[in-house]
Length: 250
Length: 82
Image (cartoon, rainbow over all chains, first blue to last red; front, side, top):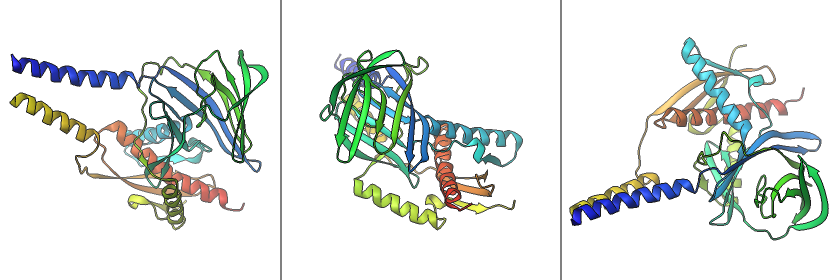
């Protein structure tokens, strides 16, 4: 009797933790933004990014990067089939992608920014999730058939103007922005970053689990040091894990 | 009682493996790709990465490594005066 109870209890405990853990990370809605960053008249970022939202967290990431991964995998599959070396040209490879990804954890109230440095996915805690600082004005306009309201956020030298809609009652938005009483539809800051909502609630993603690549949490100082070291080594043609580039004969 | 202890051990092992506390040493893979950058230069890119144990994870790892190298090449290309 005791044996039966303990086995049943253990199975129940395991299945409950698995089920609840996954349900909380099921994507409830998905939004796509056109993201750009223009610095001194030069387009540095021109990409489509996706915001996946679940009960526990959201994940904002580059679709251009996903496209890159697909292109490389396709090149390798083709090479395997033909018995040749995988080949790619710059024309096939998306440039000006958004190099960061943002995780907003609703439970810990943390905003985590992650980026790839020297074959490692490193991340820092950028901010805490808060509505503080936003000033909502009386200005309103219609964007994508949605009535949007203007709001401004000043943080240090950075001034951000956002247009949000209460018809999508989510305190969400692109990048690390959060805390307005509706989804951010359009956003611009004085550094040159812009994001415009392109589409919402892609049905193909609904029901899927948010997949966040594993990352290592570091301090801002550690991240800067890692980036500096990686750049210095890359300038000398030295990459991590013994990866290397060799000039081929044209 | 023994069954309960066994279940507890299994649970701890499960947690440990998820938290990467159980070290595994997978074989290293070496792969080569040809790449032509925006300036028309041809390159041979050689990468090494740990076998992730499944195709999807290996595809991700491969793409990330090549992405690092290609970004470096394209940056150099963009910095080169025309």
